[in-house]
Image 1 (cartoon, rainbow, N blue to C red):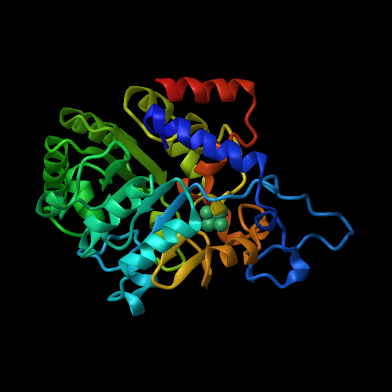
Image 2 (cartoon, rainbow, N blue to C red; image 1 turned 90 degrees about the horizontal axis):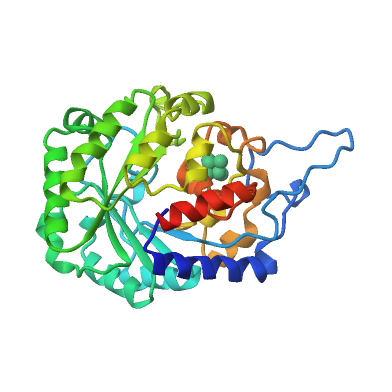
Length: 368
Ligand code: SF4
């Protein structure tokens, strides 16, 4: 993700500090003999061949907290797993004090407030104010339909972005969210927020059916509102979403993003160039899901935003009791085709598998 230069400097300092002095208790591999929580792990062959240590051993720490204060939503989007997985707790909310305690406990410099629809959370203004008081950066992920109504509860801040979900132009987006009129309301939200001095970026999920030329058309359309950036990620199959037809294999993702480097140069795409290369199949990364921990009504969700093998009471338990090394492509069949940004963007940001040329590319992108 891209931030202001001052924010990037703060983030770089945080990453450097954690890489120089990693918390030892977060770096342990639990190993297959531990009886870790992942029942799907692929065990090492019995030939005596030793499993390679995870490349991110000794480098685990949180970067972006995915905070879900509620799972209720006014929409029922086709690709959303939350309203299905958390059906039994859909009316519950994480109390404001508990949300802020999770921010403190985790310590990640970036908080992505998601859900459900976080703009339906009654204290959403107080929640963002509390997070900004803690000097964290915020992405408030929303379908945009409540922005006009609730805008006065927020104050513009360079550490704060509305992150509006748009999966295509009007017809396509309304189809994805299964309701007519959503695109228009979201765009009204974007306009109102920009007019009031807020920073706004958009968040697009790419499905098997997505026409990438339409995504370019969307970015071009949003130019007139002076939108500050675009986030993009391929969709990946939640176990809670039945419709396998909409998700892609790795090869299909590579093909979909083949020409995306050109688009990323033309528009303010927030994803790092290395992550874009990863999507094109030109770079390989391990999963770094611990970089994006998720907190919701059931506690700390492990191992990642997509898979739920357990909920932990404390962040410390999530970090120390999750068998991180048994997730990711090659370790767990459920991860085989996953390329979502919350699982792999930390790898790009941390420069895993990056050479000098890659680091220079990242620097040029940061300063652009
Ligand atoms: S590869 Fe994807 S699905 Fe698997 S643990 Fe990582 S983020 Fe989750």
